[in-house]
Length: 210
Image 1 (cartoon, rainbow, N blue to C red):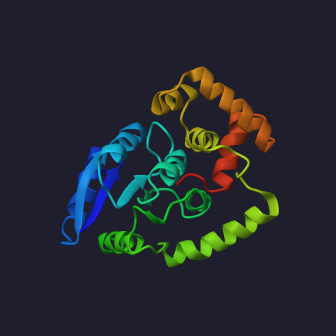
Image 2: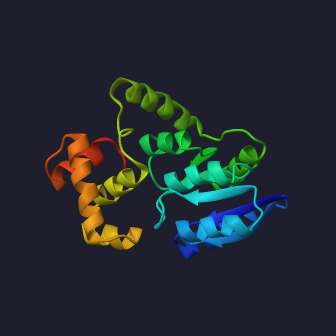
């Protein structure tokens, strides 16, 4: 039996994923988490094989969770389930330790296939993602892309680029607006940008948001 934890901040999405997975007799959902802190706590007290991890959850970012899982729970494999495009975000997730990446636009059958493949110790990426990963990795080799950013900086960059205000970002991540402002200043410096509009343009041009 494949024991799965579902980590997503939307209750309807968690219910939908649970319903889809439990139609397969080889899969059992053993817990749900609504944010990063809940997931890390759940991992400490629940035996699981796979974590279905939404990359946009509040609390500790998915990339930070992946790194903590690699250190504290190396036996648990993570499959990213995301609405984000299959390029820069996917590359960062795989680099941080994810065993696979699937978008929410893919079919239920594909989700079950991905879970089983990851459980078997293999990586899961779609054909489309395989091509985009190759292109993205080549691009990163040339100019470094967003690899200069910390996981938290990358998370704040995507939220700001998706139209969130600093106050909204602070609320989503459970940090102070001052912290967001500090990260924003570092982002501008690292990326060679000057204004919020420049940040939004950068995010759109690099397809870091849907």
